[in-house]
Image (cartoon, rainbow, N blue to C red; front, side):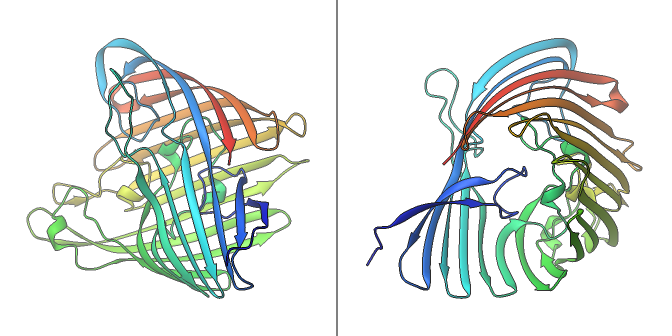
Length: 346
């Protein structure tokens, strides 16, 4: 029988969100060994974009260049998400969705389709399903009003995988995809290894990626890349977050900034992210963030910077404001953005 006692808890798991904030949830004790948790948040954004890169609800590593400047304002709640976790002894199942699945219109209803973000099972040290790539360090993502903040400098990818943890060491096989090539012959999974170092000072991860890419003409190419990312505590509650990525990483970095393949050549990229978060008071804080990615084969360069201010009105309710810029550097195109946000943790 269901235990009628409900209690509020804080969820700080790295797979729950793209920022460092903890999100509230409700835990139901079914039995001594069974627990069911519901969580998520409601997020409303008001966004204004002006410039010669077309409006997007949030910046990714690509954009549509315009011949003339354009301005657009929009209010939306698509980042709103809901998750549930079921724990039975050593087994944990987790599923989360948000509303970036498309659909709807701005004439009548502004409806939006839900989509799966995470769906995985964890048994002891084994994780199987769709969640953040092992190559990705979520603790190194800056707090931002924009969906992920300087995505040009991020490893930001969720996909199917089988991961095994051995203390601070993780190894995984993950879903292959030859973006820009022949995806019909992607028969070899991507292989990822990662080592985590943690302490009172913060945390750092070092990751390596090896995979096989298939070109449109039927050739197979080996691709390798590496990443170092982390969050370092500074003074008080302040921290600096950083990521540096180098190699034949393609779709793993920059959220569509560069492809894996251009013709028969494997893209080689360099990407960096730096963000500093400062607490003015216990509940008032700001982050300055900068991200950039460059592709050697495609000659694509994308940059984003932003500055924000967040205030916790209550333990569950946060408001924020952010200004910044996104640019397609190789095309000499850029747009400024202003975004206000309100987030209520469930």
